[in-house]
Image (cartoon, rainbow, N blue to C red):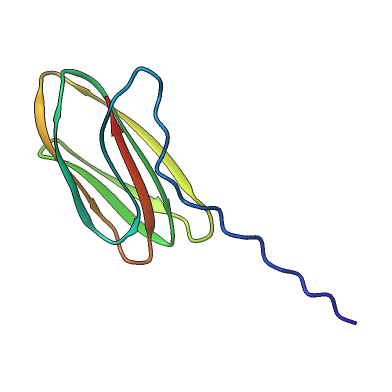
Length: 111
């Protein structure tokens, strides 16, 4: 009698957690493809962008007009990333993610 081996269940993609003492400016996901997330007001100081993705392809997070960050996502595993951005003054930003439909992702922006 042959034994059937089940592949491991895929880990659930969830919005990244947040550090104590920070406030969430924007969240999104889990979702696929490209999306404009939000227009946010950020204060002077440090801001964190946490992005988790799964699926073969490249995703790009844009905080327009300030910065654009490309990430390589892997097909079979969740790829977590966190970037710190230091703002010199209060600013308004548009948060946008550009990704192919093959990439599932979640995002949290905190300050």
